[in-house]
Length: 375
Image (cartoon, rainbow, N blue to C red; front, side):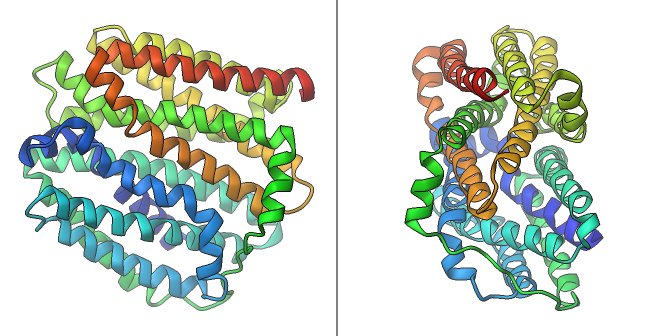
């Protein structure tokens, strides 16, 4: 289990490592911030499609083998990024990583669940989710810290070495169960989406993560506007609010029991989400950093509540129900990591915030409908 958790943390670190470095990369490769943001977008796109299509590729492949091959590719591609001579090469390598990460995350989650006893599955999956949150923070913070001390290429080099060490450890992983994924059936997808409860949840998380991805992706540029001292180190540490997701996720069930269910918690969380967005529009570094803590807490509280609600509502086909959830979630991330950049460019930071508030309001409205009808 420790090896699986470390592998999960490293995988999520790869996903988010470029974010605090986007201003530096935009400057070095002479590209706009919207173009630099593609380094995140191009990874989110495969993540949004993977639950629907990876079943065909991985249906009969042992999870241990998937882990080994994917980790090797991820490690080598991270080392190759150190040698990238132009932005096109960097983008191509990130696309390769985007194609590998969904397979790796699916295998990690499956190996965790299949190799846990029935009574320990929930605890094991809670640890897995916690590892994804830690990885999301570590990737951003460590790449920023290392880049500020040395160079951005060193960040990816050390990450690549860490991934290859994990690959060597995975070679000794004991073969147990094979990866069992549900092959998507188009008719089944239609049946699930025809259920208004599921569709409302999916659209809610799409809008919610669109907003979150936009703020996280363009946060480095905003901090650079607010303070001339916003180097890679400070930008990396500005993502510390992400760790509040760990606290929120682990306490979501207790809060649901206290306040009357997941539907009500989602409404409360998304109200706080909107408040945090308004605070992020204030031109003050301390307020901005404080707002980011509230922003992350609200997002992950709503996210944890939504995943629990989806699984409670699903009487069967849970694999596909969850697969669609992940697709909508990262689909929102793909759109949010790129498209709002044009609003930022044309109308400024607060113009982008207003656009994101409109999207967040849609998410809140959907949560409100769920709470009134089913809460």
